[in-house]
Structure formats: C-alpha cells, structure tokens
Image (cartoon, rainbow, N blue to C red; front, side):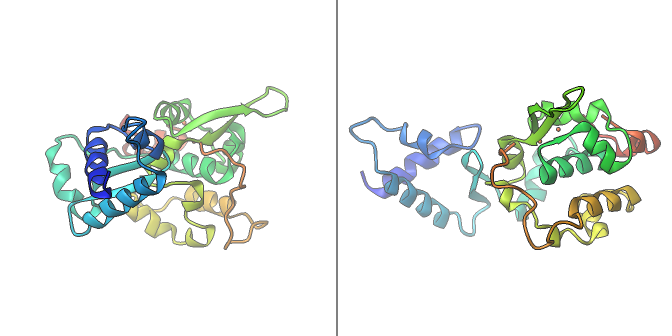
Amino acid sequence: MKVEQIARILEGAMLSFNKPMSETQMENLFLEDERPAKQDIRAALALLLTQCEGRGVELNEVASGWRYQVCQDVSPWVSRLWDERPQRYSRALLETLALVAYRQPITRGEIEDIRGVAVSSHIMKTLLEREWVKVIGHRDVPGRPAMYATTRQFLDYFNMQSLNQLPSLAEIRDLEKINRELDLDDADPEAAKVAEVVHGEEQDANTSPLADDVPASIADDSDEEDKQNPSMRDDS
C-alpha cells in the first residue's frame, strides 16, 4: 500500500476518533496481510504534518498519541461555535497543579507546607476527576498520606508528550506575565512564594526538576484564598 493511501486512512481514522490515537492503534486499523511497516506509518504521519501547513487544523503528537486540533491562531473564531465560557481555574488550583507537576510525587500535606495554606478538598477532587493527577502510592510515614503525580491526560490537555516539555525553572521568572497569560487577577504574594519554593535553592535553574523515573501522571477545593476572593473559584 502506498504511503499516500495510508495517510488518507490515518487521517480519516484520527478525525473520527474522539481521543489521541497511538501508532499501535493505527497499525491495528489494517488486516494482518495488509498491515504497513512502522516506517510507512511514520512516513504517512510526516506527509500529513506537511499537508497541514497553512491550514486551520494541525496534526500534533501528545502523550497518548496523535490527534488533529484547531490551530491556536484561529481558535478565537472557532470558540464562538460554543455558547459556554471557557473554563477558568483558580490560582489555588493552578498553584497546586504546578507543585504536583514539578515536585511529584508529593503529598497534600507537603503542598500545604509549601503554600502556607490548607489545600481544599474541592481542588484535589477537581484534579482527580479531570484525571490530571492520580494517587501513585502512600508515603511511609504515620498516617500514610497519599502521594500524587500527574497523568497522561494532564500531558494531553496541556499539549505535551512528556514531563520534560514543562518549562524549565529558568523560564518561570516573570510571575506578573504568567498571571496575565492565565487571565488571573493581580499578582498574589502566595504565587511568588510557590514559585520560590518550586525553584528551590538546591536546584540548578537551568536543569529539569523532574527525575527520569517519575511516572507520567497530577490533583484539589477552594482554599482560604478562594474564600476571600470568590471570583477566583473554579467554575466546575
């Protein structure tokens, strides 16, 4: 089978699939006697990538596989197809998520120690329900608290293939700029504290804080900050 025909089949399959498609799933589209070689699958994907240039959709590889998605520069227009407002996340939830991503595996108590405020049950529940974090074990200390880590769904949602694509600590400097990009209110001193702890004096700012063996996995309720500023609460 020619690469062009394989590309057409893969394109139709990915547009019909409701989640990213792995290369193994692509291979299983074909009967055993017609199954293309792995290099032909990759050649077909390369062809589809080229064909997306200048279009309103792009082919992108994330942790779970390949998917078509709307290009970012046209998303403001495409988003008008839906009446509901885009999901906004509270600063408390984003800080909790960032700490799990950069310091995993981490317990709820350790997150509270870093942030200096209680982590609400709603935040952890939200992160778990969205499958951005999961429990990967329990710390061997009194009470055996759950340890949280990020998931494949977290990587897919944030358009990443692996945790190595998280911004390096050297890039996380301008908190005001980050707040503006996340459409948050004015800067919060708690955010500065979290960034300072995440950076960690013991870590080189130009290296990744993630260990190679950390599982590709992430998780919290409105905490004290949210109670003081209800407009910042998660809409979920």
